[in-house]
Image 1 (tube, rainbow, N blue to C red):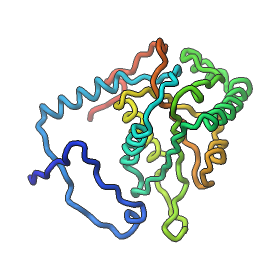
Image 2: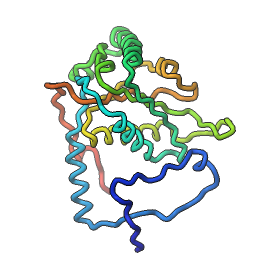
Image 3: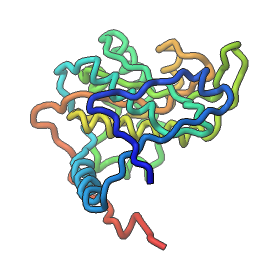
Image 4: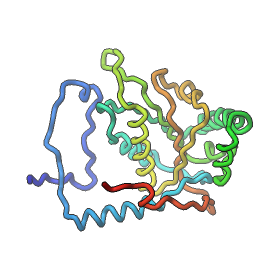
Length: 242
């Protein structure tokens, strides 16, 4: 087996443009640094331990978070696999106070209608233990909102429509990476999905070919923040080995 040199610590791999990626196929030798089973097991166990401490937070501090950290988290999300490598996502990172206020006002309007008129009784019953309601103050308090958009289709360098594949699956994976990156950076997150979310596109100036996927609230938890006491399903309930 050929041992490829590992990338130097702190060095970021080069980013290729979408236009390059959509041209004829090109290949390069995979950079890979094989490690032993013991080291792999140690890393897997450490990541599991770290991931298990991630909690969804609804009470945020207004303490600022440097833009560079958010940029790196979004950059990590952009490394996610996607159907035919179309990368059908766009992330709008919002820190402007007035824009956050507008998002909150529009979201709470939709949420009030949801809780008071549209939500079925069983859905409200399922939400009750989590302490959620139509009040979404965290949309203004948290320093960052990352609005994730899914591209229904792409455009090439000439403006011609290009079909995207497995859009929802691809954007979902990228969002998972984004949440993990924020957690690794020491930040708390909350996935928020106003129902419906159509207002986000015009408010943030996104084209019609993009659809809001979710809003990720990012920041530091408020002092004394409370989270529900939850029990995650054990491995034997979520996995089958054949």
